[in-house]
Length: 219
Ligand code: SF4
Ligand code: SF4
Image 1 (cartoon, rainbow, N blue to C red):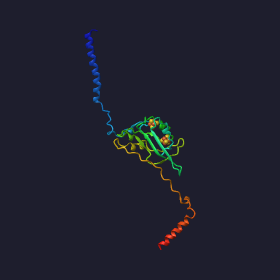
Image 2: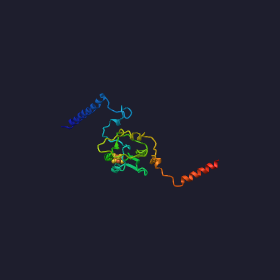
Image 3: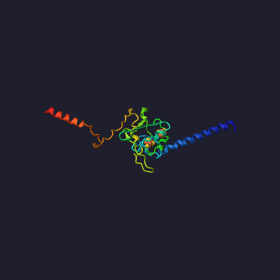
């Protein structure tokens, strides 16, 4: 093939491929657009359309948490911080801190797999952007929570709807950082009168005599 024919052959291929490309582009002019106007023009929140097993931001239901810390032990990068304190008077254990750092979390799911009660789980929430990185540490224990008993094998555990716990904690992106409140153990329940310690010998008599003196002085 001579140089002239190769030249015109190249021009022909260029025109053909250009036509192919433009044909694809023009075909989109006559199709219905499938672009989603995110996030404000969806018929329902995108998080509600995700597959059941998708891994969003973690949440923990402290009503069913046993305080066993298995999730924290399983986490390979120490995202979870739990404090369980015992009330000496009642021997009841309370969760006074349950923090998850979603800035570090890699959404591996190891913590959720290790949990015996299903208390910690992935929600379908994924919009957790903030303007202050300190807000990426989510504090779930807003008050001291008594630890739950481990569920019986095969028993159905009642828990909050997925995402209902973590959604309020995520807030709006530009909210200011607020340090977590220190969670204290609740006061022990008051003992019934029958269990109150008897007054020390002589104490009642001394009080009576002082009462009498007071009465005498006032007369
Ligand atoms: S999902 Fe993985 S990285 Fe995130 S807290 Fe759980 S174990 Fe840690
Ligand atoms: S969330 Fe689960 S694994 Fe973690 S402390 Fe509570 S019960 Fe144990």
